Length: 589
Image (cartoon, rainbow, N blue to C red; front, side, top):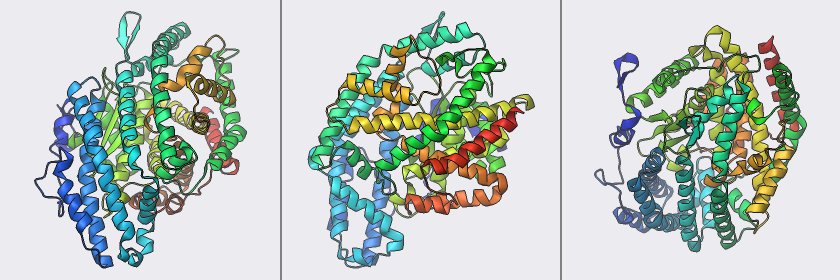
């Protein structure tokens, strides 16, 4: 146990599962019985029946019904979130796996039918026309979209999809790499890419990618199974294809697939040339005629890897100080999470890959999961997930459960902006000699991410508009997009590794099309960064105001509330890329 600020004893990662059961309940139940523990659908079936039988004669009755429905939804959602958290904490646990399977096979199918019945009751309520549109238009639009997509025959298909997604986590969580006498997780292998010894970097890269390649065929078959299920779900719902289905199910009302094509072209015109210039400078500094994949992360000036922290307690303390410097209220919120044990940050065998923030919806508290191994990127990840957590805190007072979650694109504005807002304060981790270096790497990564997103997004557009495509065709399309968006890396002799990389990207398995959100958000976050350099206090006030709106406004209105321009084209991208390049020049001077 470690002492935190103000003498508070903090929970360690090993106690996370226990702390989920002992969270403070600051929002008392009024509709769901106080002592009710939800284990099976039969526990909540009477509550759904009460809602279905309720009289909704006027707007007041309908609004109370909506609040009661929201309370029940939050209670159930938190149970599901806890199950998901436990399965990612330990992918090898048979007990966790069985609880997950019981949830997706027995609980969720009945839940989906019950939610559809509530949506239909809302749709038919005569008092719906008396609701204030300024307050409830977004809610109403979402309910009607869900009704349009709902098909009972899709429920078992969605259950099978959830089980396949769980298999991806299990496969990836079990991967370890034997390298020069020791065993590492894939995340731990990343440190070798920062070493100045080029031969070591290459050996480590090849060892890691050979191990991941061994899973390519199995993961490709798993994805193909998901692909067929998704195509059938779209057909059942009467959609042209799964892309059309996803646009409706993700409630993407503010931009179209054509806008995604516009973004990809803008990246080719504006961002990719900038990243190529960065790579050219890197190659020149390293004295290499061309860059290989193991040359992309090492410091080009010959300095050793950045080492921001030795253990996760130092990571927590350093990020706490950064959040306090950005805004004391944000720092206090992060410290509250630490005190409650709502952080699981260290990488270990058996843990699912990646990082996420999950909201425990009844408690209205965020939980952060990640895989830290002592790299600079870990600092950025915790700042990122911290932004999501602050979003959950800011929207906690929204009365409707649906409004406590913003559109996904704006959720990522919250997180990506926090990465950039924290950038001036990285001296909490680094000595003066390393501060500019860390800031440069952050900005370079910002542009590189836009290219990566364009590649992954275009890849998915092709997959889901070419029904029946098999693994070979999917891999061929990945190869085509990798060539299209290549910034100058030389892959000769390594093509088999490049072509297989798509099966290691979790988003393609977990949440198809959840990629463009990061691009839209990065565009917003760069604007937040630029505004903050002129007036930090005003920028932060607008940012926090927009977060507090949760999902009660549409995407464009949330951008406007944060003082940002919504756009995805080259005209929007160019001034942002120019500003990043100018700052990189300043930092290198």
